Amino acid sequence: MTDLSVANNASKTGFDVAAVRQDFPILSQQVNGKPMVYLDNGASAQKPVAVLDAMDRYYREMHSNVHRGAHTLGDRATAAFEDARETVRRFLNAESARQVIWTRGTTEAINLVANGLAPRLKEGDEILVSHMEHHANIVPWQMVAERTGAKVVPIQVHPNGELDLDSFNSLLGERTRVLAITHVSNVLGTVNPVAPLIEQAKAQGVITVVDGAQAVPHFKPDVQALGCDFYAFSSHKLFGPTGIGVLYGREQLLEEIPPYQGGGEMIERVSFERTTWNTLPYKFEAGTPAIAEAVGLGAAIDYLDSLDRPAMEASEKALLARANELVETVPGMSVIGTAPNKVPVMSFKIEGLHPSDIGTLLDQQGIEIRTGHHCAMPLMDFYGVPGTARASFAFYNTLEEVDQLFTGLQKIQRLFA
Image 1 (cartoon, rainbow, N blue to C red):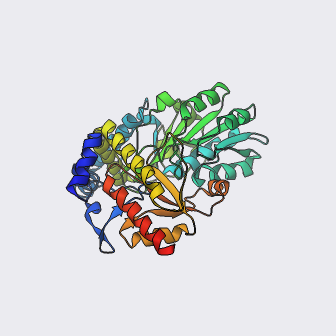
Image 2: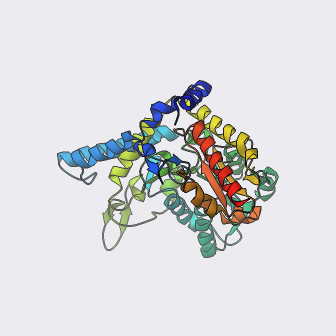
Image 3: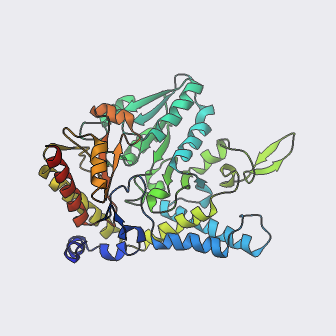
């Protein structure tokens, strides 16, 4: 990376990308003899030193099981674990830490909600999802629908990747029981107008579930302002560790729905005659939790909060703007998803080239992207493609890296022309 490129980044947005990159050791390595350009952040983002140090410190200084240890290490671990929960509460602007449930990720969080709501569903009920959903926000609802006789109904999208609001308005009706929708599409980058959709759904008594996995790396959600009943996200996309995620839920609903798993920690009292449940949030946290990972997630949020968030978001917008400018420099390249309101994600195809070939040939140049259907097969079917290549940017990427991506694509296109 040249000093000029970093300076241009900073001068355009006021965000010091060079300083930030020093916080991510993995970014300095080489791939196939070339400086690595990591553009697969939508699948899993890299981790700053603050996260690595927090998890290392936990294991070196305080590792113990949480909540019931009558000793110093147990107290330290419990304090760190619950401090992380409070950090998540602030990040989401939830009213209470009781509303913050630890899960293994967005997928488990949505499965928890779907199974918890199953007793409320019956034959003829409808679950609205969008056509741009990740499989994690389709398949759990299909499984519940098979058990209950309910029906999963897709909201259509426009060819440019925007949600079809006329489709939503026509489908939201007296049979609708659940609206499960992504905040940001992992394929298109589209930011959906979830707040007004939730408002309309709530007016009809519909329970609302938001998949926030692709939103939280780019902006802070405010669950109180959104008014949603549930909001889910994964740590590893938020620059934290894998293996942990969060489910926010409206407290009344969390009290009403049954536990997802049984075992230790989630109980109040167990007898062979009857078992009673623990209070929130522990009612949904059976077994030993991912303690170090929770600490790591808390550290990731603290790190993000230490940055200039408006400047960070402006820097990301500049990356996407540069990518959009360069599309025309690659003959046969077309972008899938051109909604005006989107995060820095670019899914694309190049005429005559398979996405997996594009990915392999870019990797030979040290450029890491993702290829395939991105766990969004219905959306691929809508666009009539088997898959796409996807470059997903984060705040630590530079304008020069965008240029390197397109230089790499130009080389590949010429090779196969």
